[in-house]
Image (cartoon, rainbow, N blue to C red; front, side, top):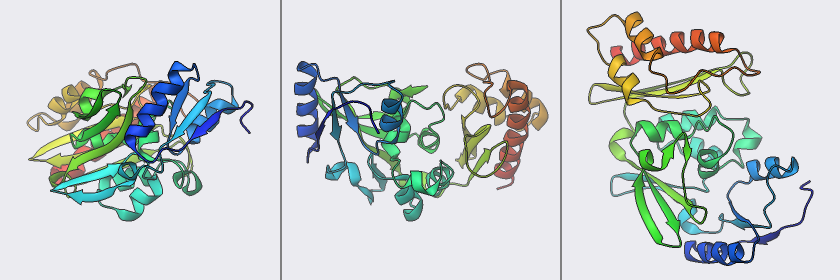
Length: 277
């Protein structure tokens, strides 16, 4: 149970959601947008956040779209991870989503909520980074389209009044050869030691990572090294390790040295598989 009262709103349009956010903000309600709500509930129960109002986006049609439109896959921010996996329109994204949490949680966790969350894994963003996806964002200044690389740097960087409406991915990426590895210390459910998502496009291997640093990332510097096929793979991997964007983390899942060991092995598996394909 959440240990405080708050107001609840469920707008039927993007415009109304933004208007209510602006009004509630002026009233000092500290409003928050709400999709699946799993993280909001978790943080509220621990008194880490105290919204005076939540704006539920699930009744907005644009936030629930999942279809091909003009050679682009459009996915609404309120589409659940379970629905993503079942539809399987973007196999790499579907497989990545299937590895997040358990089935019960995936029935509630949304694509937008996972990308925008505070838990540092946020694995659903990895395929979107690899596919150079676009995002549709709405706020008091209107609706805009932006590259995922513009708005996601370590985390989703939106203005307080803005909300993620949709992701847009070109159809050509949907059938690209890919691999997805999620390495855990034990079992098939839980946070990862290392997650790697990779795909091959125009004979170039794109890679993205979660669980390694305190944020998910795609590094173009790492990709430059890994695609130097004239260099032995072991050397490429050592060079790639030197280009990680932040220190490797130590937590309950594993130490930094162990994570580095797992990362090297998993990176090698990904490159070998895609270079053969």
